[in-house]
Length: 268
Image (tube, rainbow, N blue to C red; front, side, top):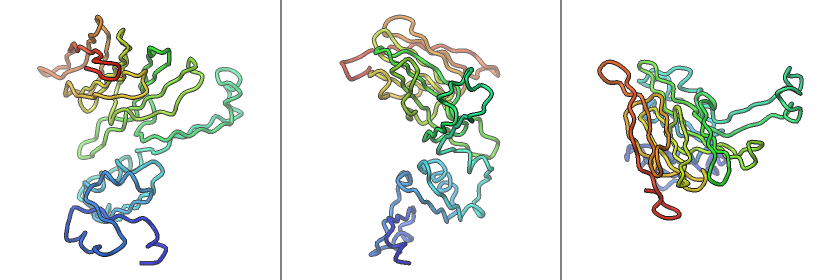
């Protein structure tokens, strides 16, 4: 081990106690918990274990450099999409000579590149808007969730949310509010709670009691993975519509949920 390598913060992740024992009394840390991968910017996978490969591809942080030494002998079918489709940074720039500059694109935006840190499979799409009780605009966005091809494992990518306090002129950076999120829909209830329904895999609800700043209470109410829609039907009650595969056909189901505040900070 070179001195330069020894000075780095190195952790070996493995489920095998015997192999981890090789690093006893060394300056290298060891761990069995793969969730710690998110703390490292440089990752090397050497085992070819399919679960380890999936974990690195899914849990590595934005901007991470990944060396997959174990991939050639992994017993798992991978496609190009599996390895590189999970964008860790979305970039966008509008050329100064774009045809729509001065028309639908303000001149102030031309030639100004932007970068948004995000883990996505498809970029941002399928967005929905609602107005929070304090007047902020709340936008939720799908970032992935396409159906996997046979024999290929595709992880869902997070559901993101951004807020605007100036009628959409400027927005906060998108933040993850759930670990998945196809076809998200929002409703601001008369009691001040914002409810978001989303899917794939499963049908889900998540809630915000502070104008979309934080979200909690995510739970699964169905096993589908297609379109959801939500409305408030009366005070403290929402109805969620969603597709369900029954009797060899797709059926539209609707389920009522009572949602109310227990106090100023909790939901029930």
